[in-house]
Length: 394
Image (cartoon, rainbow, N blue to C red):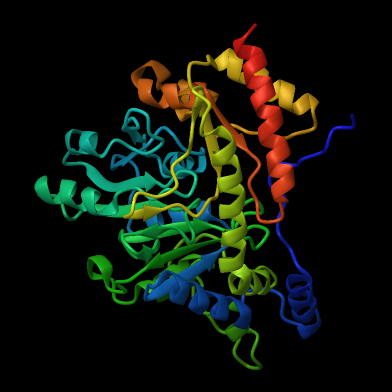
């Protein structure tokens, strides 16, 4: 039998996105301009927030917030060791040593009950992470800082995975002080690369015009964007801060505008694949089915992180290798940061985060995307069952 080749997460690009990019290419304006402005408005409307800033990555969004609010050096920021490196790399860039709080037992999300004790007088921000499209309990985070008497702490959600997820009936985007989304190629909505910050209070922490400050800080601190500066006779500008260079382009925004128009249908396709997997695994004692919804929280089906109950890290790795030999691409989300060289060299030990290690050791992320055919998802699940049970019975 010839194996089916199943990639892990190709983008869902239709002719409409291609046409939109061609239109921009022909317009004579390909960097930040009217398409970015439109996509920012569309993003804010979709998320139910007052403001959205579109950028070249979610990583840039996280660092931009830290930059604008002057968080650096001896300041402390609480976050989770169970995430992609970007969440904490931005802290290291700013000279901050991350304060890690382990995930809750049998969860991919930060243990909110442990945040209270991690807060010190130096704590300036908390960066939580929505893993696999599952939102953190944002309201409980606010309760913790209120009970600590520290409502001055800036609450940032690394929502790279959760664009389109629901929290208490509302789309993710306005619950924390800031949410940062990713539009990377493997995300539910893509602009090839890209990201966005969403928020509500444009005068947060006494800022005169936070939207304006985010915009010029994302453009080297330049007081005029490229579109304004290129108008005839309008060359003069000022540099008011040592800004970053992380603006989104109109080429990227054009893709995002179309993706957002198709997004709800794309989510339905992802949910269908999610359910195909769950139905195949529901009777398997070794299968810990990923979170879907609990009434208050609904995932956007970004990932399918299946935990293989009772399997060791080595056994999980064997399953991944066996699936690879069948041309089925799988993944692991994530290797906890204390297991990576950079963070080991900074003094972190995975032994201090046992819940994070337990989640990582037996998780396998299956292909899940809107152009995956249901019959191919059935095939993936069938082959995974064979591989797991072969490993168990060795």
